[in-house]
Image (cartoon, rainbow, N blue to C red):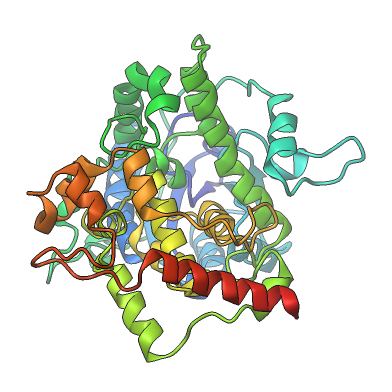
Length: 458
């Protein structure tokens, strides 16, 4: 039989993999991953995710070899590489898991009728286009969308990993993973990523470690000093575990924590639902009226942006989050909201600059989630609070007991008490060795509201 190609993208696993099972049913399988930097253009995966990708691909190759197969690696424009591999291997059919990012849609369209491309669902609880109202219209607001999703839950039970994957008689040539140089060396800025375990096994280990505290998720998820979040987001982004595998792992749990976590799975999927309807959602305001907002630009804004990226704003909670991000490739969700709000509202800097910084530095950078969350905080999204909602870093620090979190990530403040850390958010409170706030909270709030007022007056 002629071999078939399994085109892997954001589905780097062997369990609950409909495309893999369909490929096995069609004949010998060539698992193929293409490093496609050209197609996404400015949306090529960032530096942090390249580190994760290296280790995830190595783990997947090891898993495939245990099943009699192997991973073929190529880099270049995905459509052209697929056609070339198909010609080399004598393949006429490609199986792949459906993706909704605009560059993948463009790539699939380029393939046209030249290759028999079979797309399978598997990276979401339900295909986003399938969640509609009674009139068949798509949702853009989360709450009714999530209710409609719940009406279709639970999802089908996940499938097991195959014991054996039939191999072709001859393998196409493969790149060497180390030649891609996805991991940094000089300097090794990823040393702080060591606590992560990329790959399918790492995903299941993270799920098993978190399940015993899943019931506390609602009570603890907003407190960055407490263990409570699942840290599954990078595994989900790279498809090392499927959402329905997680959903069914929670079956039998009927508590507020589990219900809240399921809604977070839904929130992730709502992001791709928005991108599927508005492919430019990562670059364009969901509310066009904000196109006229007077964002700060120029040398002073650039200086403030650099201070924000380096965790040198003079606001302890913001700085702790930005330093956690740089060191570990991840940031606690509550702190992400505070840091994002600070950039947009306190510094009055365009949300797209922050979104691109997260794209490059987050291990879990996902177009749907990243764009939706930034537009939510900025108030520019189709489903977002009003712009005048301005988070106070001080109140967030007090309400969610962030003292230990700050002491962990901002060593200049490690000797301070919670009260002293909270006081350090004020412009007139100076701590030796720690920068003064870039701007006072009240002054920043007044400036942001003035800009918003000017926008509304137009």
